[in-house]
Length: 227
Image 1 (cartoon, rainbow, N blue to C red):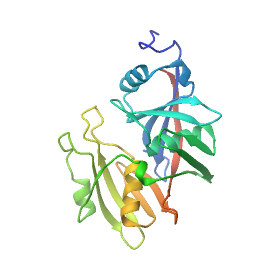
Image 2 (image 1 turned 180 degrees about the vertical axis):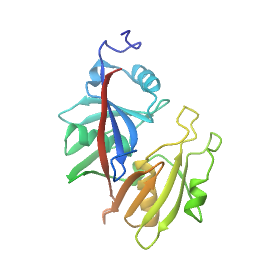
Image 3 (image 1 turned 90 degrees about the horizontal axis):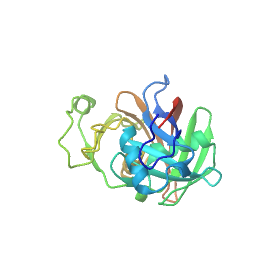
């Protein structure tokens, strides 16, 4: 195949689903380029992320240190939740190095967890709705505002229904599972949450006394392909 401009031929991409539901379905698609050295430079990485079209793509710069670089189809991110949960699962590491800081990972049965600081998450509008039905009936809003719409399913149990609309006009009208927004909502509410997002993805969170938050979910390998 013809290589994407700035990309060496034969670059492999692991396609994961992150924050899958209890039945193993759904989850947010993630592309992971294990050998990031084959896509050098921010411009080439941005172009490849745009071509792949996932909400995020991760480039692994050092698999032993866990150094990673994260892109949406239109911009580079210092931190994002679902890419780091997915990369931690794929690389089986305890620490990931990001532009925002070190992210610690652990593994508990079917769940992969990372620990991060909510202030690393990009700004989001967190908007509470009165009912699950209102959240589920929302139409995709016009581009401009990054909206995380949520309502309680069961407040006593910490169960939340959510949908996410990035509003970037980059082809991702709705984000299936959004770890950064889950961190911000957990910080705002000050409690552990069990979030059902999108079509049926599941995200778990747990705040710690030091201000960090654990974020966990299931990860599945969907395919391995050339870029």
